Image (cartoon, rainbow, N blue to C red):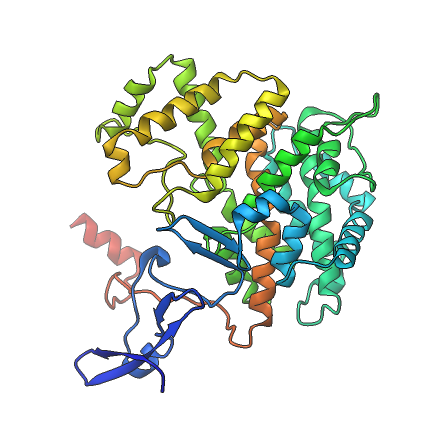
Length: 434
């Protein structure tokens, strides 16, 4: 028997296996705790609970480390592309030249959506949030590919994966075009993954569109940095829904719903709203910092701190540099960027934030970059979803292929009323009157 932990709940000690991961993370295996003792563990928000063993992404929040399949995020951001990173996450290894070419070719071949799906956009009001549209359309894809509805019988799961990765760009771009009343633009197979998305977003039939390589590079970086982040809210949702043998389309639609939350995928939108507020109200940065530190002000500093990272978010460092390069290239003097830099400088020099390990996270500068590209604020979370798709898919596949997978079913500690007996409504009313 390997290493164990001893737990005594009053009826004699029991031994619980200790599991050690490849990066020396340690866990007490409590999967048989209830059957052996009748006890369950209580861990609100699962902050101390590992829901699965996974080989996809490693995070060390204390040291500011993020790795996909063992590769540091800094190396992938510098050398890889989003498509290659997606392949890595989904297949477990970086592709050969031929594998990468074949993967790109398959994505290009499946970039268009069925013509009938275009009519569905007519049913959405112009005011519809793009996330609502994206969620609905991802789920709707399952009706066009009925062979993939039963994941246990999907004979070509990899084709389903490529269809989702490719078509999500058109669905997102069409949601934007719908909101501004412009015609949909078909994808162009000669363009890269990111270039094609930019073309579908910003091209119009009346004139040619040339993809700006600097903007394309910046978008590529943003998508890589968002591609996966271990067992976060939306990824855990995808795995939980998928554990019921739910098809990939529906599982990802559920992940999109989870990502929509302002505490998750909507965080960069909240940062931009905060910067707008400071700018429009002409609030001095030092005064705003004082408001954040005041417990009675209810003002929070958005884009700082992270549930996992207790050091610099490694993605934030990469985004800050790219943000400067993008705005310099576009010749944009964004006052919001100047406010953001001043906020960062003031916060990092203030012991209040240092003691609480509140450092800039990935959301702090990403919204400014999307804004510079011309992507509207209500599309920010959609961009996050496009980037996170490979990670969700990788986790769904890992969950699906794991022989230990069981349908997710968390326990609870009941705190409601004890046994009560039904009283007819007349007697209840009479009792109240007396």
